[in-house]
Length: 91
Image 1 (cartoon, helix red, strand yellow):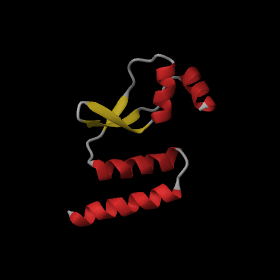
Image 2 (spheres, one colour):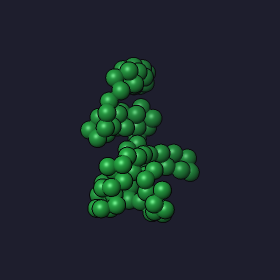
Image 3 (tube, one colour):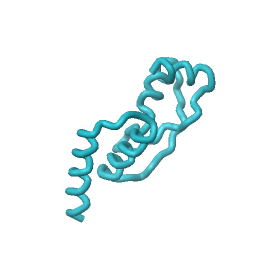
Image 4 (cartoon, helix red, strand yellow):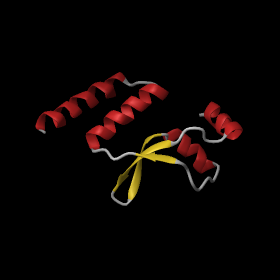
């Protein structure tokens, strides 16, 4: 978080958050740490990429983006795959 805070202070936000609309709000799929720092800096508007995905797709996307930008939790990944496979086989 410290390195991210320094980066945002030096360069600003260089990568949009990825969100999806849920009811009357937005769920952050990628960028929770960036958003936390931006809130601490009292930034009111944040550029976002808005995606239209269902719950299963949202979880897959969040996991994929976390894998690209952060650390994987193999236990959570396995549980995610089980849940998504259950949803997909019911379709």
